[in-house]
Amino acid sequence: MISEITSYNKIRIAQQFSRAANTYNSAADVQLDIAFDAMKYVSYHYKKGLDIGCGTGRISRHLATRCDTLVAMDLAFGMLTYAKQINLSDDLSICWLQGDADFLPMADNSVDMVFSSMMLQWSDNQDAVMSEITRVMACGANAVLAIMCDGSFNQLNDSWQTIDNQRHVNHFSNAQTWLDAAKSQGLKVTMQEKQYVTWHQNIRQLLSSIKSIGANVLLTSQDSVGQSKCDSKNVLNRHTLQHLETFYQQKYAENMQLPLTYQVCFLYCSK
Ligand SMILES: C[S@@+](CC[C@H](N)C(=O)[O-])C[C@H]1O[C@@H](n2cnc3c(N)ncnc32)[C@H](O)[C@@H]1O
Image 1 (tube, rainbow, N blue to C red):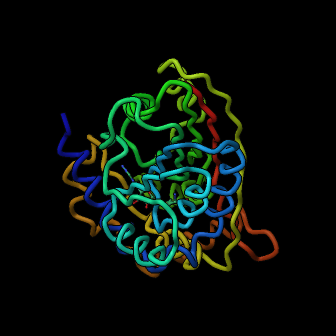
Image 2 (cartoon, protein in one colour):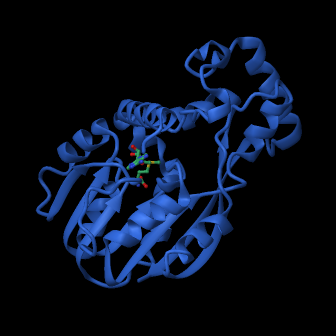
């Protein structure tokens, strides 16, 4: 059953990524590096592939050259609209589909390769989403999954803690939880972790790097129902921003630049 919290979060995720569709490609350099690192694991040619959380489709185009047909799926309608437009002239066999990773709109055992980069951390439940991925994988299929995990945005989270004890940064599950979720589905899995760091001139630029890719949705949990529907506490005033910047600078700056860490686990699975 889909809870009210889940669907409320999903609507906000879809809206925010849809809004960011036009700015995503120019702002998402680190996401591109991560996706290309993940693509190194896609080593065969497949009959049917699935790209879950395809965003603007810039990775889907590369994946499509490795598949007879590729289903490129995303929750955000705005992302798909943008992806279809910019990939219109390509002579690639891509089927664009709106859908939710937690409830894949695909038949059992229907794909040979599942790819997903920087999306699964938005899922509600690791076991449920891994069960869905396993369900749609045909026998012998591969899955290549790059997932943001624990340790990501730690400097930002730490800096916020000096201001109040509210949650301002989403919780990221640890890599071991993702590994266990994949293994519990009976998949054969190998995992690697890698850290990426982006550098920013100031806190405004750092926060806007997150907003420009649509990842600025703070997910609502059971214990904060009602609070987050009123977003006034999340409004950033100049004083708060200054405090955040000062702490961040003092604790983390190198050569006057502010680092932001993306901790990513890569799961390579076969069924
Ligand atoms: C950070 S972007 C990554 C896009 C692309 N994979 C890339 O590497 O550039 C995350 C994407 O996941 C999508 N997304 C978030 N939650 C989703 C869900 N439950 N099901 C499918 N897509 C989802 C967002 O709409 C967004 O386009």
